[in-house]
Length: 186
Length: 314
Image (cartoon, rainbow over all chains, first blue to last red; front, side, top):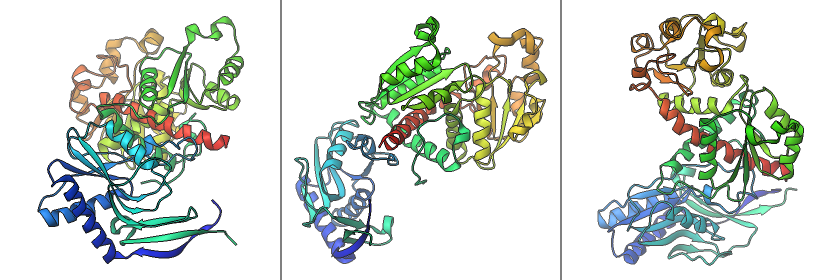
């Protein structure tokens, strides 16, 4: 890729992000009718800290720690033959049986929908959840597949040249959502 | 976590790999191990890729291990064995290679009795080539799975004392293992009867001794090698009984290794020849773990090479 990424604008600061995640946690509880058999599954990499943050908020509201699973979708991607080199494969693990559970897939950004398609494929190889829902912090549009989120933190209209970056304290040293723009190298 | 990219088209020899690349294979393998523990032991990763398993020498374990790895990644695999291949009918190796190339496989896994054949093949085909053993020269995936097993048990490779005991001269796993362990900073000692020790073995970067006790004293890892009974029973040592008395690993002898030392064997093992049954089945034996890890390591290699090939062709 020629060119480099330049900060275009800030979408959410740490405080706004916390409030958005809290609202998402509330919506998830409302949609699922409580914490019974609820499992949050974070899609690597940044779906995981999102799932953890949502679990923290749910714990604050209900006093119950909802289990958090980790899903690596690398092996289920449909673009492995077009990207090189191979992305590093990381482990997938679930804290409890998926059979009959209510899974909420969590990811930082919803874009083409291909990651979610891969995640659904991966999920069914581990068991048969009763329901699967999708929660994303940012929906930036440009879907290539018929996939929509059930819980959205913030809808952000973007152009294809832009990149939405979600940063978490654990992975990136701070909570922040920004839009970066690809600029041609002079 | 290593964040380097895999660039190599083939896996022919451990000597071609840097420490970072070895690390990448091992890290990738550790993710793949989880796939074998799932209710559905299959991922769609290599769907639509063709892998040819070309075995010019009999091999049950390595071939099955590769085959299972291929199937768990959803690749289409095809087995050629020596008895059914054109070579028996007088076809030259180069012609075999060109014919395979014409079928457009993505990867070729090859086992051959002569060193260098995998490399020759790799130079002639655009498919990625994986060396599954070439004579007594090398067996890189075995070395990788051994290293993976050691790392799982000991948490690291660097600074470990590894003893390899037995037929140092003819075992195909020795050279690859030495290269890998040296690259990763382990300390290797080899031991065996003089008839089974290659001339100037020290030049490979190991310490050579001629007694089992001396080799395994203070060792973290004891790797026993198979005595190839079918090949040289009468030539290399007077009797099986004598071999066992001098170089067989018994519970008694294992005491001179570290208390938490692990016992490995690349298989197939001769119980009562190079290893006593109670040691092979004992709590310190990781022999079956090696087999299980072999599948994960081969999955990792197939995965990494299939990606590199794309880049080379792009």
